[in-house]
Image (cartoon, rainbow, N blue to C red; front, side, top):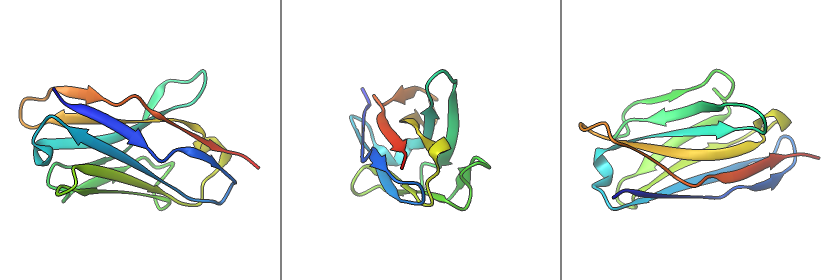
Length: 118
C-alpha cells in the first residue's frame, strides 16, 4: 500500500517562497508518476503540476508556470514542489497524488496548508 506524506506548508507573505515535499513509501518509487493538486476553500481540487515516474517529463498549470518547479529524487523517494513568487490566490491545501505505472492505481496524501497573506 502506497503512503504519501506532504510537508513544507505554512504561512508566507506575497512574493515569498515555499518548498513542499511529498514522501512516498510502500511502493517502488520509480514506478510512480506524481502530481500536485490544490484545493482552495469552496473550490474544486485543481491540478498544479506533474512529473513522470523517471522524472524526464514535467507539466504545469498555466497559473503556476514560471513560478513553480516540480522535481523528484528517486533515491530519497520524494517529490518536491518549489513555489516562488507566491500570490494570495495560491492559498490552498496542497495534495500530492501518485499513480502507479503501469497499473494506474492512484493514491493521495493528506494535504498540507499553504497560506499566502500579508
